[in-house]
Amino acid sequence: MRLLAIAGSPRRGGNTDSLLEQFIKGAVYAGAEAKTLVVCSLKIEGCRNCDGCLVKGQCIVQDDMQMVYKEMEAADRLVIASPLQFMSVSAQLKALIDRCQALWVRKYVLKIPPLGDARMRKGFFISVGGRHNLPTLFEAELVTIKSLFKTLDINYSGDLLIPEIDAKDAILHKPETLQKAYQEGCRFITNS
Ligand SMILES: Cc1cc2nc3c(=O)[nH]c(=O)nc-3n(C[C@H](O)[C@H](O)[C@H](O)COP(=O)(O)O)c2cc1C
Image (cartoon, rainbow, N blue to C red; front, top):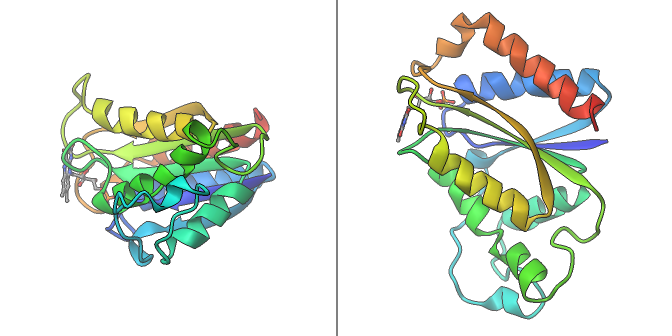
């Protein structure tokens, strides 16, 4: 079972990274083979809306996103993690998501599997936000992530959304939340 983890925070070693690390540990304990991509260390342009992908469902922009497409195609399970930024995902992660327009073209224009084959894939989302818990806090972000998973034919399996986490090490003072991330990672693989 190949797990691809997409770390979307620009703050390395912060709250999102800590939760994702625990999630991956749990998943690996449950038998997954995990690979992590740190989005802010990759060179990923935003989508140019050039329509270059309309021919074959392949993006013509030659940057690190070409490697990301391959990793997504190879994965059975995908976990995406991002801090809440202006009520959405980080800008770095949003660029990656927008570049999935080429995969949208595969599915909706070319009518071919967006990730190359029809295997059953599952996805999980992790996020933290600094503000106190409002019912709508993670709403906009979830619309974006669920729309991505739907486009990629990935079944949305669950999420871990943690409010009131702001300072870089705030999550380290919540061992029960880190433990929950570990358990969710474990469950994400064993329930598959
Ligand atoms: C540019 C920016 C925008 C942010 N926007 C929000 C927001 O809309 N809502 C919120 O609750 N927290 C917001 N935050 C706070 C972060 O979500 C919070 O600090 C989080 O713990 C950062 O996670 P990290 O340590 O993984 O980077 C924002 C932070 C930054 C830097």
